[in-house]
Image 1 (cartoon, rainbow, N blue to C red):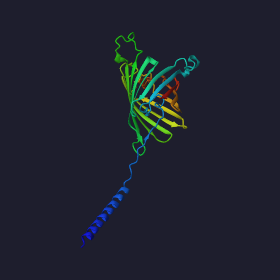
Image 2 (image 1 turned 135 degrees about the vertical axis):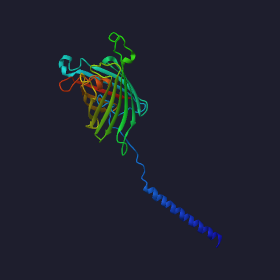
Image 3 (image 1 turned 120 degrees about the horizontal axis):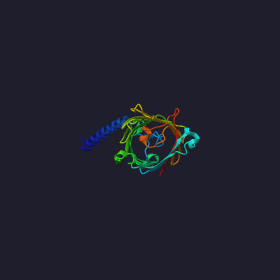
Amino acid sequence: MNIKLFLFLVFGLLVIEQASAQDELLKQLDTIKPKEKQVEIAGFKGLQICNMQSTKLTAKGEWYVLISHRFGDLTEGLDNFFGLDDAYTKLGGIYGVTNWLSIGASRQTNNKIYELTAKYRLKSQEENGFPVTIVGYNTMDINTNLSTDIYPKLEFYNRLAYTTQLLISRKFSRKFSAELAPIFIHKNLYDPTTERKNQFVLGTGGRYKLSKRLSVNLEYAARIDAPENTVYHDLLSVGLDIETGGHIFQLLFSNCQTMNDVYVFSNVNGKWNGGSLYFGFNLYRVF
């Protein structure tokens, strides 16, 4: 056989075999579905539901200025001008260190309490993926109103109180989101007749979107192991979110006037059925 003819036949067989192998590979690739992109889902627009924290975090590099106000007891009527005479104010700031971590500091008029916070995302809800968003939240209170005149042996650590919270939320639809929050509270100084040094709370809340810029919010926090002779009650609040560009404005009614988390979950002095009620607002401005 002519050597040129032999080389032509061998080369032709190799080309046919290579083409067959490529066709087989293309068939296999056609059967492999491209990996679907996991899209994170945000269940809440505001950093808070009413008093409770939501699973929303600040973005990296963002500054939030917080102004919260709680008027006095509405049920006293004209005696305190429907709460205007006995108002509490809270001023604070929150900074997004990363997209998954933010830190904050605030000060409120009640007991001149300074509150330091850290909020961090552990996992996000995803389309066709992870079903919930999980966020951790920690607070430390410093009660600067305590006096050695009343507590002669007062030490700095007596001024401190803490909360550790696990926030778990799910956006069920375009309009409805819900959250569950196991909460642990520790106080270095407490009244043993009506309080506990360590207390567990189970909070829950939800958001229902009414329109593009309006949503109604509801929250409830049950104290799991409160003393039988306690004078405090479970937290119950209802509110309205108003989105206005760079602002989130929240109006709310609650049986709690204080705004630091330790008191919000363990020292609620009002009741919806015949007790004290408070009107207030949270204003967030992002920079």
